[in-house]
Length: 347
Ligand code: NAD
Ligand code: UDP
Image (cartoon, rainbow, N blue to C red; front, side, top):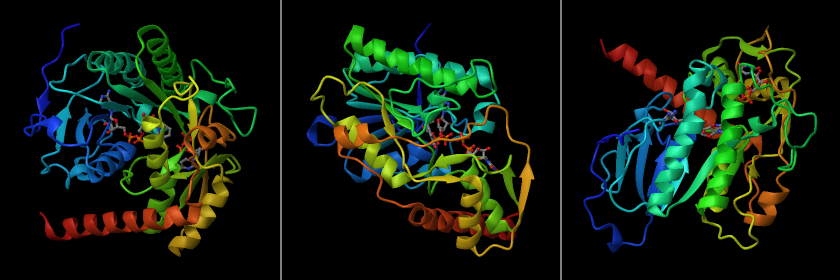
């Protein structure tokens, strides 16, 4: 396939990149929830950031304050299509892939291609640039687990042809690609198995449970509990996740196994009913619960065993759920106020 010419918001980078101490970091999927938070964090710590995104689920609002900065560049591009970048790249975070089930199921073939073809394109870029590359894999590689908590040694229980397969199997295949590119081509790889993460800069219409419940509670509509609400998840606050991702990226390989997958998540497990109750209480919302059909193949339980992350990275989450939900609810309220202000004053 031919390399694609890139449309860059600003050519990276007018300044002499070798004249300062920060790294040049490519964040694929940098306009999305985790990616945009990572861009902000990396810029704050003095790195040069190239954000590359096809805007499938990304939002420019997440990047507004970064766009005028000299050490930030935005490239509109789909990672499924091969591309080349000018100049040096030290680190590549591959966060490009819709993370919300209704969003990744909209175009399952493209979701699968994003993980596999997009993964290959970024790995080959990493090889050409001698850059270290991190894959945002997922707890979904464990499918509907019959073991809890899930350690990295658990091999999963995944349906290859269900509605979630385009995402789960795409990520499993991407892990294989990263592993083989490390073993055979010597690419410096990292694999983060991310568990459910939430926080500011989530899309209000994202469709995942935390954003749905907060939006519903703040607007006084019924909270949509799927199934009986007794299924569990373990929710990690974004600041903890960024710490984990950056530590995994920057930790040098001491034991010859840093390229193996590492679970990143908060082991504080709760049912969806418990989550609904906490959000109703924290928002003082009059909303009620409404029970809806459970989606096909919805995992019954999910809880990370983070022993490996603790030992390898010295990382464990610092934000209990209520402490992470407070700024998230404040963010949602601010966004809703803004929307209302625009509706009242524009058009
Ligand atoms: P998100 O949907 O908010 O962000 C994904 C970003 O990737 C968006 O900006 C989107 O436009 C972009 N993108 C999608 N396909 C692309 C493509 N083909 N080319 C270029 N850009 C593309 O999702 P998120 O929650 O920020 O998740 C980020 C990554 O972390 C994803 O890879 C996801 O699988 C993984 N992850 C997230 C969670 C979570 O709870 N948030 C859990 C496990 C794994
Ligand atoms: N869920 C829910 N109500 C919603 C959205 C999701 O009860 O409005 C449930 C969903 O069925 C699942 C859990 O919440 O059991 C987490 O769903 P989410 O889509 O956030 O993430 P994932 O299933 O990928 O972990």
